[in-house]
Length: 427
Image (cartoon, rainbow, N blue to C red; front, side, top):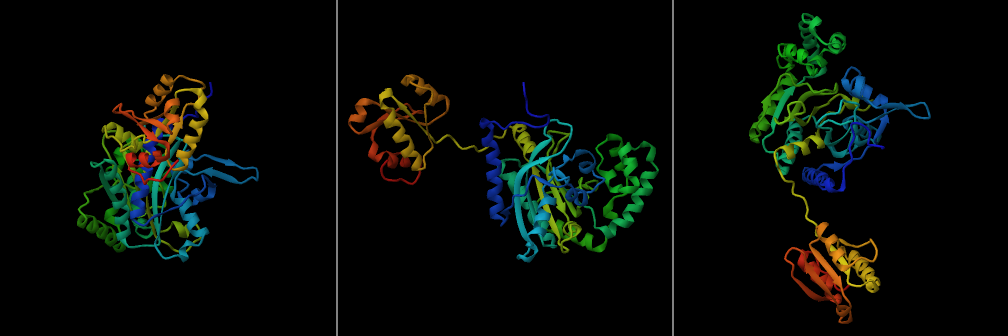
């Protein structure tokens, strides 16, 4: 039997409403913050990620889905959302627009990783990017946007962890200290960390191997090596968060897993899933646009993992605010009335109602009622021969069981009043 590829999953109709709930909530909050939607391709040139994300990262070395197209070009499924947005910013000359340009996105990302709870090879992210502002106030805004989203969906006990990873200038002296420290423990490091020690020692702080993590806890911390500009930027961010009464923890080991991060780095952590406890995170990337050949442009963003968020909601028994079925099911007492049924169904749909009916042949009225009940329709219209002669239908409330005859001519107005919608005359 054919199955979905390992590390992917089907989002079935019964579960899709939960995904729509998160997406709609996120869009609403982004709109209130002045962020507009951007949609980038699922495939990009492999070089985009190699140059921006960093060739010594796990994403590039181990997790990219890359292939050659028929033109011999190296193409990759996008593993993250920031690099494509930065590419679009340059390609479409958005640096000529009033700055900052504030965008949000939603969609699938792809990484060849070991599947486990909350981790898939095709996974979905909600994200925002703000390009063109160096002020730490925009850092605070991005953090506040993500925090407000979590609060809105019911996750009010997450921990915000913060760090500054400095800039290329102040990381030079820090790099020397880091290399010197890890060289003393080189034989105890995993093979990846041994290889990266001279190439990109900052990546050693991000290693997920237990023995490397234990060693990294004793490594020099970058906050002690920040230049004046980076220190002032971070202090200003903390001051803003304090003024907004946003609780946070400082985590000097937090560096994030991508090379383009500068200055601010942050994550939202929850404690019920120890191996996959980051529900989202982000940071500043002030050199990324310039790396791609664009003008020097500061930027900051955040990406939130949809699957992990849904898992957190489930673990805390938080019920999403899912919309109820507000539809109408149309049944016929006799097959000879089918033409009237179809006229009514399509007339109500044109009025904007959610309407369905039976498609399984000449079934009894009782069978049709069972179907309406199983599908959760709150209202049922029964077309019977006697009622039709009077120009009426029978409208049943499926919750209370009460029913009444309603004129077909006034049906849409009556249904609108029941459902709190704007009434329209006639069917």
